[in-house]
Image 1: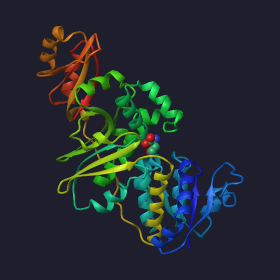
Image 2 (image 1 turned 60 degrees about the vertical axis):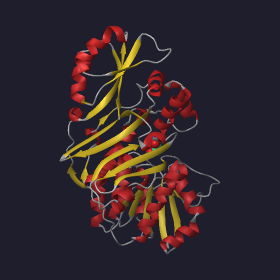
Image 3 (image 1 turned 90 degrees about the vertical axis):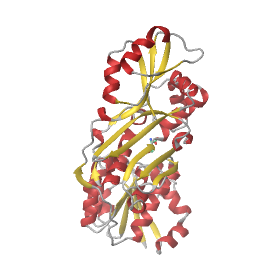
Image 4 (image 1 turned 90 degrees about the horizontal axis):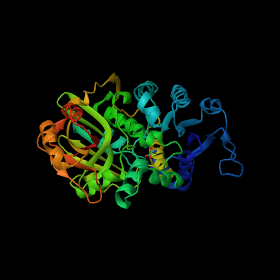
Length: 404
Ligand code: HSE
């Protein structure tokens, strides 16, 4: 019998209980042993619920119970999750978590501790919700040097951008709708400012290169400045706008950023819509491989957590190697990163094209019916530094979006 304890009975924690209850027999077959939820920890009471008799309020009950093999955490945040993770591993229990803040910040330390204890620290659900991406990076894409990872890593913002793109709605209207539907948090800052995607690309990049990427080093831009007018121009150009978490290796340099990008249908991520996530990985021998599916939500996220539980149960006394050292991966300044830029500028093309050409070189002007007092242009490929220099010298720039 494998005994587990679930920390947090919110959306994901209750999903874990539901998945294990629903698929108990098939999960037991895969593990080769029965699985039992011995405890659920939460500060709240849940009278008349299926967990009423296994609910505890004190973590010590769990950590001091030698029968508990695996601790599942679905609380989020680093406090008290970090001390719970450490204590669980120190007491010889594997720890499975959906908590990206915990993983992005303490991943290497907790992995090292799990190795020392010959247990496992697993976090499939921390990136891409139900999409398998952590295990494939660790166990499948091992013949390749990873050259590039590009992901739509946040379901909330992808829902907002898809609605804006397809229905011509403005940001505030769609955000309000996303909150009413329960996709976006009441405080949506972590999603719309790109912080959530930033932690996720930090985790993926750390695993891809085996060294720790500090998420605070990643240039991060959210979607709050994207307007319905940007989508009108994008449609004219045959493009959509997506929030990407991206990292790339160029020789011995590593770049990472989170920002909105304009893409067309040559990019496989073009059709990743709504709350779905997509992650495109480029290997030096494999080429492109894409992972696509439900990036958020109760049961998809719980499915990924329970897949970790199965892995931990199958490797009860074996540490599964994941290479993520605490040595920091130095990211290059994005000033050297190159792309084309879509730029909106006030005024008329007749008056301004000469000045624009002086600063930006050869550009392609764009206008859309019904948008007056401004126009847009698309630059050639240029570095961030070159773009900033040209933009500073040019009057009236309204916005710019990177373009693939
Ligand atoms: N807020 C996150 C999202 C939840 O919208 O993708 C999943 O990590």
